[in-house]
Amino acid sequence: MQQTIALFLDAYRELNSKKLFWITMVLSVMIVAGFATVGLNEKGLTLLWWEFEFPVLNTTFIPTELFYKFMFAQLGVPIWLTWVATILALVSTASIFPDFLASGSIELTLSKPISRTRLFLTKFATGLLFVAMQVFVFTFACFLLIGFRGGAWEWRLFFAVPIVLLFFSYLFSIQSLLGLLTRSTIASLLLTMLIWFALFLLNTTEGIFLGQREAAVLTLERTNARLEVEEKKAAEVLAKRKAAGEDLLVDGKLPDGAADELEAASYPLRIVRQSQKDAVKAAADWKRYYSFAFAAKTVFPKTSETIGLLDRHVINDEDRAILRRFSEEVDGRPRGEREDGKARRGDIDVETRVEDVLLTRSTGWILGTSIAFTGIVLLACCVIFSRRDF
Image 1 (tube, rainbow, N blue to C red):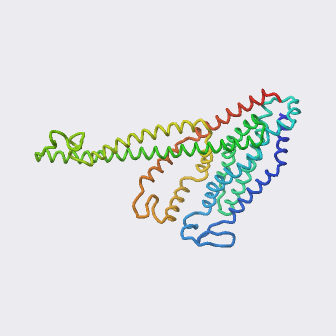
Image 2: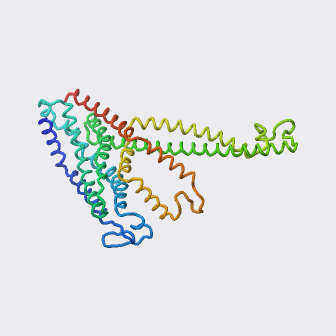
Image 3: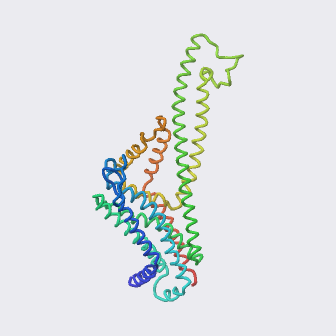
């Protein structure tokens, strides 16, 4: 145990000596300080001693604590911690294993009575510590900001620490494996960025296919409902024409290629039936496409959905209702209404269905599959690190 602690402290000192560590820390504090300069009052938005009047963006519609929580959950974490700070962290930690293997210090370390697996995991944990400290400082500063400026002490903000740490561990495990294979800091960093971009494209593609699937299913449901209505109308028309003694046949055949007497009695029914066939095919196709995308996504870590878990803990249903009302006030019309006053029910229903699907994805599935992927990568790292000659 003492050996592990000594290795951990040594690796921490090495990481702590890098200027980028402190630059990122200072930037995190500056970001929170920037948030602190912005505020809300009964008239509108404030920036330091300036005041900007807004008819909607004020404490009448949005409580101050929700305003700061929204900035934390929608700006601070997704933009700063998830993108900028993560890139800086990857740059800072990219050299941990390549430098350790190339500097010659590994021979001295391996001469000590410690397993290579424990040595690797200790180095890996040091990289995670870098991110944990950054996220904790940023979250703690936001916690104080919301407490003093918003009047609410939101302990749920600290869920950001394990969530962002898990998110970073997905990428850092890949970077560690590439560092062991290439022994190059630049190569491991660039390849990790490329894989991260590929994961982003995969998640985006799955989201697009999900939206298309729900839109196709919704179109099919509405077409089926319309088909029932048209069949009833056609049956009524057919009954009236037969009662009047009208002959539906033309030269012994149904007119205009009608499939049956109902279609012969109602041209709109023919159109709806064809639309229903097209809708069935479209729904089946998009279900198949989505199943492929979902299967591919299941195998790989869920970067965006892991960060999205923070919204479930920080922004509750009551907060979402307030934000939705605020959005309607800003738009000047109810959500889903077009400029001409007509409803956009199709779009809104699809959005609602997609949101429901995403919310039904359990935390266990999101984190379980992602952690399993990370575990496999780390296992490969331990095997390579244990068996390779240095």
